[in-house]
Image (cartoon, rainbow, N blue to C red; front, side, top):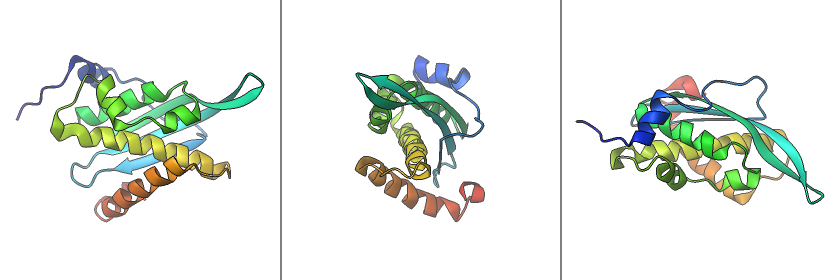
Length: 162
């Protein structure tokens, strides 16, 4: 079965943005999908800047490692591109729909990859809040619960996420 990928999907697959790991990340998100076997890791560094005398946290740097199909790599690349430079509040609100739109669409059978990318970023942000001992925003709590459910099912067959 041939899949029709957009030029943007192929661009992010063949030349992914923000590919790699990072030393001492402020947050790490690790997720996987039981059905397709994709594994995504997102690493974030948080910076701080003053805007109108208020300190704002933003995603200073972001990297990813993905083991999976073309759509998995492309969606993680797009998610990291969308998140880089955004405030933490803005990044929390990024969704799989933003990823699909940024890629100019995905075949319906590959939409789960965009959901994984959303989960991976959410988990990296959740990890950052947890490590920083900051109150975890409700939106991240909800995303974390969904990611945990997926992870529990996935760990039984794929120990990489443990």
